[in-house]
Structures are given as structure tokens and as C-alpha cells.
Length: 164
Image (cartoon, rainbow, N blue to C red; front, side, top):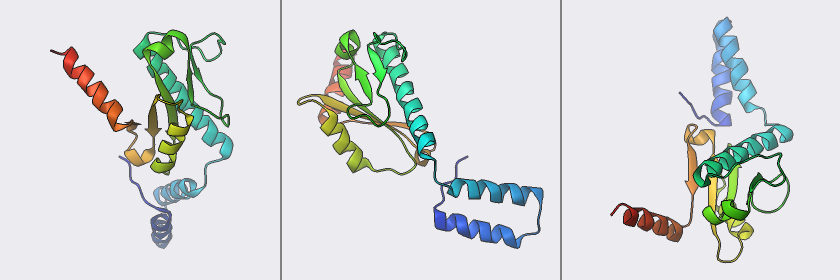
């Protein structure tokens, strides 16, 4: 089970815990709450984001039946290194033909959807569709895909016609 509480609520919980008699359970819970209040280190955050990008690369590999090997320079599916400009997943050759989308990946605790959509749009070439993949504990560990409505309509119509 996931419980989402803000910092103010965490402080209240810690104060309430301190009023309880000391016990192993009380100390363990207080320690977990305190740890959750510490900001994630920049290096750790980048590693978390890169792992999410690699997970998306693996999904695209399954969809396109194109091998994904991050360490192979000839791979048609690559995860862009952190802090470099451009899309998060680089697609070339057959992979790009089979999956013609500009991909942005976000693995964050705070959601900034308008900024992320603007980033996805700005990283897309003119006329290219973009996809935004989000992973956040705010969604109870669910993974979310965001796409422009015309693209959704096109994909839904294509799916509907293929089942006729």
C-alpha cells in the first residue's frame, strides 16, 4: 500500500510519534519518515531517470522486434545520456520506421505536466508526434503515457479498423 503525504503532514506524524513511548516500531517508522523527507541526490535522481529511459527502450524493442543494446553503438534504439539536449530515446533505422515517435521519459516525485509537454513538443521535429512516459510514486507505481489527442484518435481508429 502506498500512502502519499506532504512534508507538513510528515512533520505532524513525526511529532505525534515522539509523543509515544519509545519502541522499535516507533523508531523504525520515524526513521522511514525522516528518510522520505531528505531530497534525492542529483546523481541518484539522474540514475533513476536513466533506468526509466532504459525500461522504455526495452518496451520499444519488444514492440518493434528490434534489439536494444545500450552499449552497442550500432543499436537502433538508444537511451540518451542525462543532461544532453534532445529526445530521451534515440531511434534510427527500422526502429524509427516502426515506432515514429519522439519519446520523453520522466521519473519524478513532483508532476510538472505542462512543462514536460512543452519539452516533448520542442524536442520533436516539425510534424512529428511525441509521447511522454511518466513514472511516479504519485500514481501508486503506475506507469503513464501521455500523447496528443489527434495521435490518440489516429491510433484508436487504426485499432478499431484492424479488428473489423
